[in-house]
Amino acid sequence: MSELSTALARIAPSRTTAMTDRATALRAEGRDIISLSVGEPDFATPPHVVAATKAALDADETKYTPVGGTARLKTAAALHFHRDLGIDVPATQITVSAGGKQAIFHALLATLDPGDQVLIPAPWWVSYPEIVRFAGAEVVALPTAAAGGFRITAAQLGAAITPATRWLLLNSPGNPTGACYSAEELCALGAVLRDHPRVLVMSDDIYAPLRYGAGAHATLAVECPDLAQRVLTISGVSKSHAMTGFRIGVAAGPEWLIRAMEKLQSHSSGNPCSLSQAAAVAAFEGPQDFLAEWRERFRARRDMVVAAINAVPGLHCPVPDGAFYCMVDAAPLMARFGDDEALCLHLLEHGVALVAASAFGGQAGFRISFAADEARLAEALRRIAAALA
Ligand code: GLU
Image 1: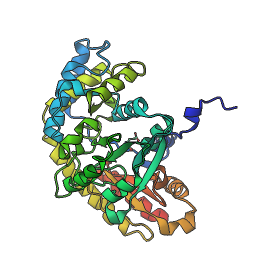
Image 2: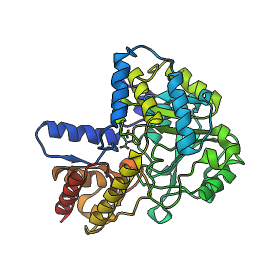
Image 3: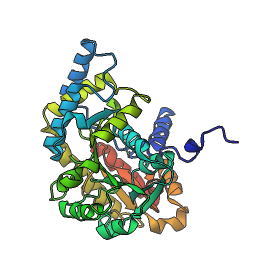
Image 4: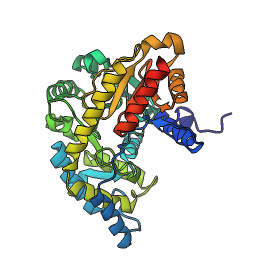
């Protein structure tokens, strides 16, 4: 008999964090490893955010706060949802958690029962299917391909919905593919969803500031306001403000769902870290002008990665429209390596940590996070080419 619960036995550890931990351990042993595994901006957290954190510590903001975040942060998050995503919600429809990941975890656990189905466009972010399985529900993959911009179509969605469907998980810009849905595409998905009132939609917009294409960011709660009462929009400061370690995510959605998430949070972590909340207020309310500069640097890195990878025989890298990942197809190399995990181990031996595409429900390839400084990125690309020569 397993010592683990059946719920835990259903899931696997996060392969993004596992590879990152492995790279850190190898570096501690003295190995020269460049990690392009985790999605974590290398930029320094903006100084005004650091200053606000120190000020909160000096002001003894070291005690419990309300479970779903301070009133001050909820107000600042409402400003963020309005200014950056076009979503107008009162603070009562916002909750704060320890990273977007915890908000997603609580929303799914609060609403899923065994027998429910959750539609997830694949390739997907590693934690989506694991959280769904942990909750006892069934993952239904909606396969996408590079040729279709890694986006699902309305027809595909319509064909996948059953009476058991509880959630559709959308992530735009998407991790790991960079897929970005246009307003028209979201409206087409919305037209399908209108016929299925039981289906909730999670719109994970954490990468919204990082769009490189011509169109503006579009999000379901804005494009289909009549559906807003069943859309949960996820955002945060980790990616936009280089604040991954602070662990602050924010969610906006219908009040019943926000209260349900807070009920669960009251028994899991309780409130998010008080100092991190003060930092997030500064992030949302302070200057945003550095973002344009960061975005341009990410764009240049993306172009560097795409050009270098496409010059390596056996690799193909489509151009991502958003976020800071490239999804590299390495199918021609599978005859040599067997599977993409073996390929990633080979590349790790050559000093570059990457996450296999299979971790994301993709196949025969790997994800490159280009949120690393230009010199390290260039050296990693040189190592990849040399390792596969
Ligand atoms: N979301 C980031 C990634 O995909 C951070 C690690 C994680 O939580 O998966 O790399």
